[in-house]
Length: 214
Image: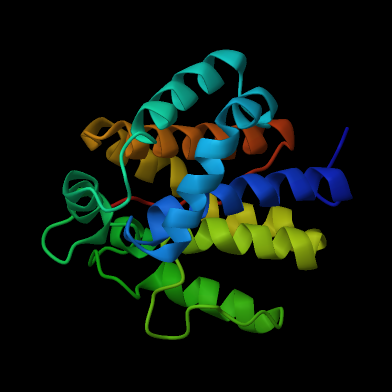
């Protein structure tokens, strides 16, 4: 049975997470998202055929939505408004993207899961790319960090996913997906959830159990 310490397995997880990260981490008119949209537009058919850890039916559903959403330009006001409504704010967010909002009894950003992840990063000598101004348990940052861990220390990848991602990601996407009105964000969220759950099953990962307050 393949494990996440195998180079090919770690690379597949890292590449998938890194490809999805910009959709959650940045406003759609940011350069990072423009680059991601260009990549997805140019290779959507190949990505659909090769995407790991999802079933054929999941890939068909998720990529149908993503490809429908790719017809929208990054400058489209509706797309920008949808990102703000779902994830970015600054006003009310339908699905706040931080783990501590769901797992901390006070529902705060920079709560327990943020501090736990920050401590884990320090313990393993991993510098956060986001500094102290952004909570590291942002779903987009977590996906991006999975790519980094897969590239630089795959021995830690299973622990990272179990302790800091999978214990809340499915709960989060279950809130985000039904609220998404734009197919790009619905498809990206579905694909992220299906991918992470597929990784959990394929590599027999056991996320730590947390209590959800929201």
